[in-house]
Length: 380
Image 1 (tube, rainbow, N blue to C red):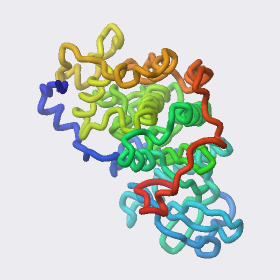
Image 2: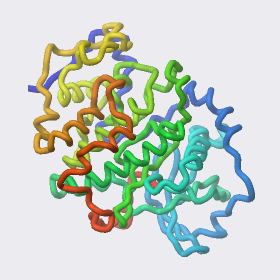
Image 3: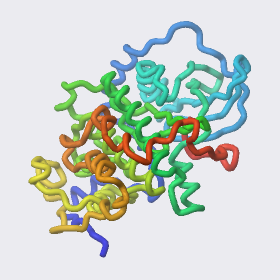
Image 4: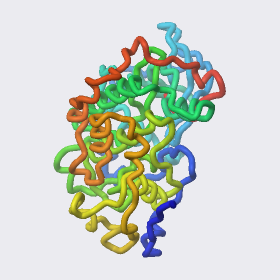
């Protein structure tokens, strides 16, 4: 029988913005946090030299994606002969906003993370009469669209467990690198993971990333970051503070499950429905496990009420995993954010050392590009 949370406060319910039942994109809003950060990011992001003119160097092949903050084209670099992805940067209000804060953040973060094999490479910044373009290495797929397309036809994941281990280890490696540079991504989701035909995962879309340091722990941060299906329970319940591990690692746990089963762990249509699906998956949270549970705004203000108990379907769904595999999955999906493993800790899991061993990149699955088939709804 489906489980449902009780919404007790109409005021609290009205604060929960409904979202469509499809893969969520970033909210098209400008937050107080963005406004406060804009001067800092502008001052700390500098460019040198002359920007490349798009028309002088690149031949557009076609449009491959569009998101809230940009339109993405596949193009051929006449200088190198390689394909690239051109992302035209769009401000919220193009006529008045000027250069978008999300683009400044993306440039800053990608420069700090340059050189990691599992983070998409920003090659340069180019300009044209129509605006500013970020030039990325081209990747054939985004994993969200790839999973959706394959699951619709085969009702399973396109990746066997050994290949999932490879992808998960690559993602954790990217996050360890990112977090080690005091950055937090804040929008880790399947559609922001690119996949090449060389079997390599690339973490992309750094428009919501920001510097993170210990002093931010008590600062008010944007609570609606992270796409709905990958948003941790503390944010669904109104928290306005979070850490690198609490936000990015919860999303990684969701992706781990999605890679294994071929569909999202929880695909709620709004915040209440999403929290309800999380409870169905993980069971009802308790104060014994999460002491600060009833300090969260929507529980402290009697916004919602949990049912007395529920079955923990996660263990049924992934009962075929080894004990070490289940441990890794459940530690990333801990209700209590303080108990979630960091990326560095997760990389030490014995799950990666037991059979089936991670697939070598040279043997990873290959797929026809969805861009050439029918166009993608997302990224670089």
